[in-house]
Image (cartoon, rainbow, N blue to C red; front, side, top):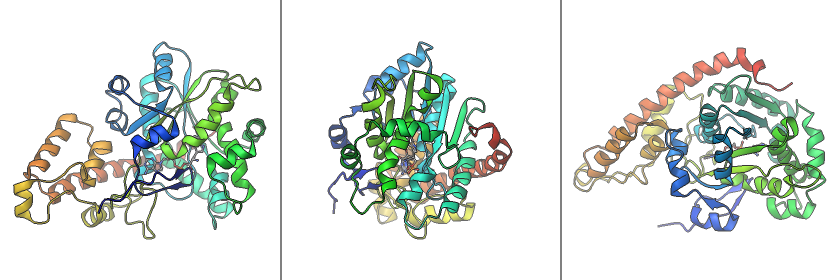
Length: 372
Ligand code: TYM
């Protein structure tokens, strides 16, 4: 049975089926149209193949970047757990755009946010998770000297800026936008000011210019609030631009990979070993194949709902021709689900093997990235 899309989205909650067309209207964002989409050719597949579906002023940001005006990118991480591949979406976009435009990238780590929001997460544990997540992010290959990472609990200078943004965000705005409930602690209600300070940080730090914030659509409420205050005379900044990614579904096919099940079987973690990846994909990756071999050969599979194909498209098969062939072979029934899964297993394991090596090297590089 088809589940109806409910579109319940706050930064702290995402429902399991999302109608992105409806979201564009509800959030008042702009769809990435064909012209803008075409300008993303040659970038990482998550940018070139439509995972990013809507934006705020992205066209203006690109135009500034192409004219050689100063631009920057900022996207953060709330370290509530170890990273899985769904989490990488904003950072891969940031890296791909940094490679193209040679701009600065800022990555705030909101250990305070997760400490406030996640019941049971201890302060010391939040600090430990931050470091582990930071190593994963450095391993993606950001440019040293042009990439700045800071943790709220460590880089406490950020508080000065958060105080300034807090003064311009009313309690009723925070309540309405973030869906705050009376039982939430006051940390939750202050945190939006901290994230607004993150988003404006490149301008606090380096003066007025346009910053692009690549995020999952759940983070847009923070963008909206920040854009509303950016031009206030206290700041006199440019409104930040944003691009919003669809959620990478979990292996089961749920809308958001972040809804990790208790055993972590529906997601691929960045520290999964080869056997675990193989077993998770074989057992749990939702298949668009038919029930019997004969039926599959006759009628073919459905790549649009097949998680293995979707992961290859969004992430792991950058070659358009190869992807098209996999698509056509699967759809015609020439390729079986087991064969499609095998392609993904190989690609994911190659990626993770490299990533895990680079993460070890990142331990030696960390000082080049952390903002003092
Ligand atoms: P966090 O840590 O929950 O998630 C990090 C980023 O990953 C996106 N994301 C996904 N995107 C696609 N598919 C998925 N399955 C998926 N799961 C997570 C999230 O939308 C997010 O962009 N508050 C933020 C961290 C933050 C931040 C910032 C973000 C701190 N300061 C400034 C942007 C700008 C958070 O908790 O994200």
